[in-house]
Length: 296
Length: 263
Image 1 (cartoon, rainbow over the protein chains, first blue to last red):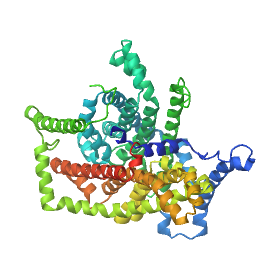
Image 2 (cartoon, rainbow over the protein chains, first blue to last red):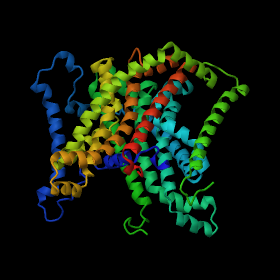
Image 3 (cartoon, rainbow over the protein chains, first blue to last red):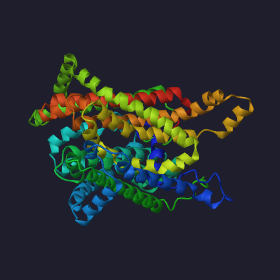
Image 4 (cartoon, chains in turn orange, green):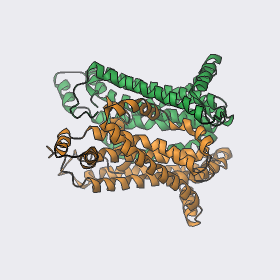
C-alpha cells in the first residue's frame, strides 16, 4: 500500500526524464546501427529547428501583424528579452535579488534534506511510525502548500524565514517519500546478513538501507529542487520584500514584460543547472553499484 | 516493530494501520488543544481545534464556504478540462509520431523546467481578474503531466499486441479499443493525479493575486483580518478537497486498472 503513496511512479519517471534530457530524445536508437548521419542527427536537428522557428516567429510577429498600441504594452520579443537579460547582468542589478532568492532556496532545501532523509529512513524501518505519520504525510503532500502562505506570512513575516519555511514544506515531501520507498525496497537478505554479524539498527541504515535507497533519494531530490524553485517564486510573489520574484511582480505591474521573462529564464536556468548537478552527484554516489542487469 | 519478513497483510494488520493513524491524528488534535492550557492563547496569532471547528460549522451553515468553493471550481473546470483535451491529444501525437516528438520534446522540456507560475502576474494583467485568467493559469500548470504521460503511455503500447490484433483480422476500431486505449489510459489517469495538485496551485495563485471571491481569496482575506479560526477552516476545506481528489483518483486507478496496482 505504501508503494502507491505520494510521489507516483509515472510522475517520477516523467520528471526524471524531462528534467535532464534537453535535446536528445529518448527513442533515438530504434533505427540502430547502419543508419545514415541524417538519421542519427535527426532528433537534434528537428529539436533545434523547432526552437529556432519558435523564436523567429515570435521575433517577427510584431512586424508581420500590426499590434494595437494597447497590446504592445504586453508584448515583448526574444531580442528584447536577451537585451534586458544582458543589461541586468551587466549593470549587476540582478545580483542582489538573485542572492536573496538563492539563500531562501538553499536554506529551505538543506533543511528539507536534513529533516526528510532521517525521517524517511525511520518511517521506512518502523511500521508503527509509518502508520501514525501516514495521515499527515498524505494530507500535507496532497495539499498545495500555497494555502499556508497567508498563515506563514502572519507567523514569520515577509522576510527570509517565511521563504525558507515555504520552500521547506514543498521540498520535504518528495525527499521523505522517496527515501521511504527506497528504504522499503532494501534487500532483506542483506539486512539479515548484516544483522547476523551483530550490526545495530544504525549500522543497518548506514551500510545497507541508505546506500540502497540512493537512486530513490536522488530522484526525490530532483523533484524537490523543482518544488523548491516554485516555492521561492510563490513566496516572493505574495509576501516578500525582496528577491527575484518580487522584481518580476513589480515589473509585471509596470508592464515591463521583458523583465518578467528575464526572471523566468534565470529561474529556469537555475533549476536546470541544479538538476544537472544532482545527476553528476548521483553518478558519483552510485559508481560502486554493479550493473543493474547483472545483479543477483 | 521492524518488518523484514513482510508477511502478507492480514485484515487485522490493515486495521491496525488505520487505527494507529486515527490515534495519531487524535493525539495531535488533543495536544494542539491542550497546549494552550499552558501557553497563553492569542487568537490573532494562532487558533485551536475547537474554535476552528466552530468556524467551519458556521461557514458551512451560512453557505459562504460552499459559495466560495463553487466560484473557484468554475475556472478549475475550464482550465483542467482544456488541459485534459490538449494535453492528451498532443501527448498521443508526440508518442505516435517520432518526428513530432523530436521537434517538440526540447520545447516541452524547457517549458516544464521553468517555473511557469512566474507568468501568473502577466496572465492576470493580460486577461484580467476574471475566470479566463485563472483558467489559463490552471491550464498552463496542469497540461504538462497529461502531455508527458500520454506520450509515455503511447510509447509503452506493446507492438506485439498490435501485430497480433492485425494478424487476427482485427479492425482499426479493435486496435484502439482493445490495445491502445487500455494501455494508454492508466498513464493518463496517473497524469491526472499529478495535474490535480498543480491545478489547485493554479487556483490559489490566481486568487491570491487578484480576486474578489473564491476560496483562495477567502483564505487571504481571513488572514488579513487576523480571523485565524476561519482561515484555518478554509485551509482545512482545501486539504480535504485535495486529499479526496488525489486519493479518489488513486482509488479509481486501482479499481479500473488492477493490473497496474503493483506500481
